[in-house]
Amino acid sequence: MKINFNTSSNIETMHLGERLAYILPLGSTICLKGDLGAGKTTLVKGVAKGLNINETVISPTFNIMKLYLKGKIPLVHIDAYRLLDNDADIGLDEYIGIDNGITMIEWPDYINKLIPKDAINITITNKKDDERLIEIESDNKDFIDEVNKL
Ligand code: ADP
Ligand code: MG
Image (cartoon, rainbow, N blue to C red; front, side, top):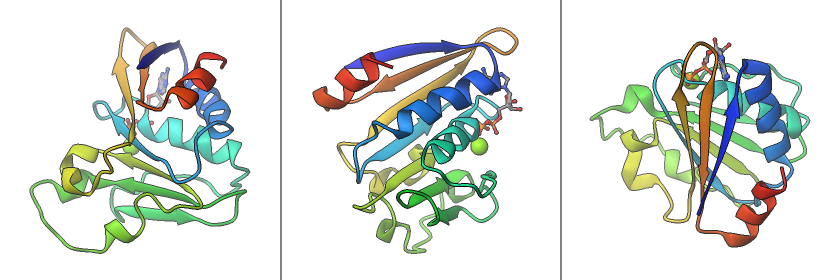
């Protein structure tokens, strides 16, 4: 099941993320797909805001993973970009799908083996200028029903 959104600024994408934060099931893994500059990190910033995380969320490309523990629930933010074709066993699997929190992964295809089968997929496509198509896909009907109400 898939639901589409269109945003026309980074603020709108952040706002979508903020509203998503209230309905993301505990323990869920969200795979964020899309080109560099699509808005993946921007969406994570919005989710962090919705979880009352006051720390500034930056792209963890260099560090690969950042864990935020000071919000309503833990948020794990992974950027697997630097792991391309690299089977580095750095223990990421211990964090992915953390059951009392939310895991958001940029470039999930680079760590395919570690992605849970029931992950939510969010694909962001660059349209013209600041316009983005944001597609949210999940097999979880209850979640999709909630996304429909956003
Ligand atoms: P990614 O993590 O996918 O590489 P970022 O979120 O870091 O992308 O960057 C997205 C860039 O695009 C930011 O500079 C942001 O301000 C800009 N932008 C413009 N329009 C949008 C939009 N509708 N949604 C998200 N970001 C947008
Ligand atoms: Mg990013």
